[in-house]
Length: 390
Image (cartoon, rainbow, N blue to C red):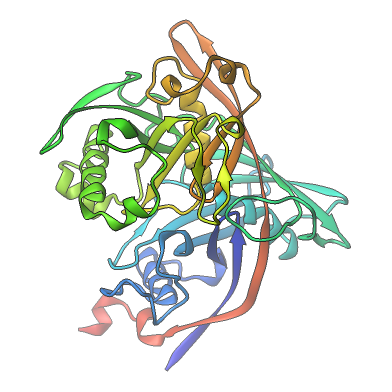
């Protein structure tokens, strides 16, 4: 027999997630996670998630758990989970900026927030990072208005612009904008020698590495996905970054228990390249070329939290990201990142106080759309406590 649970399937930015009301899920965290994993068809050793809602890539294997906030400073609480495809695990250590863009529309349409036309501001408490996000959501006739002329690269068509304000995004997981205290660190990678990296924690922690230090141009797309050697080298760097952040005791453990954070990004100077849709991104349209990995595979666009972090890193002197920018970009209101799907622009307010930096706010535009609502079905046996199974 199967049990059914009310759910909404939404696209947020370049990602998709099943949205649940917190009170519709089991209170026991272990049973709750079993329900979510079954919803997605995880774990699937074949990495297809054929028996669930998952789309077999990290950007479509995400979950959002929403509840009204009891704190008058916020409207809703938003808990994010990265559902592993082939492992019995959900990562709750960080946030997804793309899914964040769907939280405001969900809250309005579900009656958790009183709508105001033409724009409703939804104050979101992001429980993973303990940060405030304010979403400015277009509203018509009391509901989120998904129609509009705003386009984001990586998503066909246009929609209503949702403007996201991430306040004080620094130290989202580690508590520090520069978790190691350094703008750069040098690590030893087996078979790769010494590699210079920058680790920055803003919205999500990211390990940044120069593409040229790995023998790459930085514009590669299919070459990264098709090369086990490149992906293994990137994971070797990322997993060592996880150990430096105290998220795992060894690189091997990091690859098992901390796949979702930190992320790793390749950076290179602005240059012409061909995006996934065949369009040529011109050098003068962007400030930097970036590629970010997600759960071991190349993100076909760019993680929004990764974009917030990359933009912040670009404005911190002498990071490997900062090195890639022209002088004019440092004073620019927005930094334009060239990714496999096109371009994402992020505005950032960063203040330098002595030798320290404070990341006060990041702003970016996204679109979202409700794709389906109804019920997901999971086996009733999932709800049985361990003791009852024996």
